[in-house]
Length: 498
Image 1: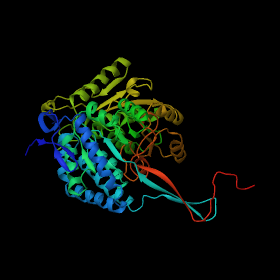
Image 2: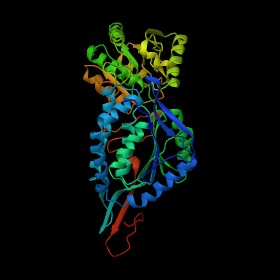
Image 3: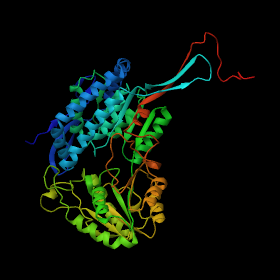
């Protein structure tokens, strides 16, 4: 049954309308006339209420033992598993990705819940010898305070979970600001957090426009931390504002990821990786393979293989069982991808397949774009340097392994990377020399696991990482503790050795 969900904000344990009565809507990108959800256009007044609730709840939540906090998150994981198919169907309808990928989106949330819950029994600090007798020294992790989580539409369950779950286990309180394109997914996710019994004010949800609600959160004096995933342009503003207002900030931004295929590679395996990396999630991943760097000896053969495979990919609604590639998220992004095709032609690239908005049959009802392969691309072209965020891959020919690594690194981004080769020496050189937060050997650029750090270098991030134990360093402060049981004044950093 087709239905429209009426979303509300969730503040201090209550579902509330925004103070103003402005209402926005999200649409099914496979059928733009279908309203998936309506949601409030929250304003600064709503932000103030949510921040006050989170600040008040923090005083109690921070003192709940970490293992007890973790039990709530474990329960969230159990509920996510119970509602996995319901959530996947909603993700597919509101965001557009095929159901197999939507189920994976929810599974990441489940995995993150169980992993984060385990950290509640650890949250390790360190013990270390003191330089003085009868003195004990250790470090412990302390929560930071109120955390605002600003998340994108492409992983509407997984990314909020990546951020919220470790933040909560560490003793922080949370305000989630989801993307305007996926309010229903965020609402259902927060319903599950609420059903797990989290105390009022510990987790809150604010719908609205990024330039309004997101901006107000970033600038709010009682927010202690901003965790942002989105474009590098917006991330630059977030980082600058947080620097000026002395907030902790974690940025996960763009990518222009490349897969290198050397002449000794298993071409069928590399082809599987290229197709999945370039066209999975319709290319709408920060880790998507947007460049294929091909050795000259296999370039012609591999290009032919890639085009033949790409031509067979089936476009359609995400909930259709035969769909390989779902829609672009909205009209604005569809036009952005289309504009890059004009740029590609002007720069001298050749469009081997695709390159156009897909309008055949039912596809004209949504925001579809043909899977596209660009050839004769040089490293300095805009289509080789700028993030397109669509089902488009650019082919670049190289003569040597060293040239391939140099071109892979020649970008302002540094998120994910991939090298296909049978040469163990090349593999280890790639792991050493590639400038990226993630490197795959004989695997595609997409497919992170929740117990490993996720993030990048250069303009992809600001040095922090999500997932794994490294997320704890985002959401905690280190405190050094000294216990002197000598019974006398012992002075450190004084010359005691004369």
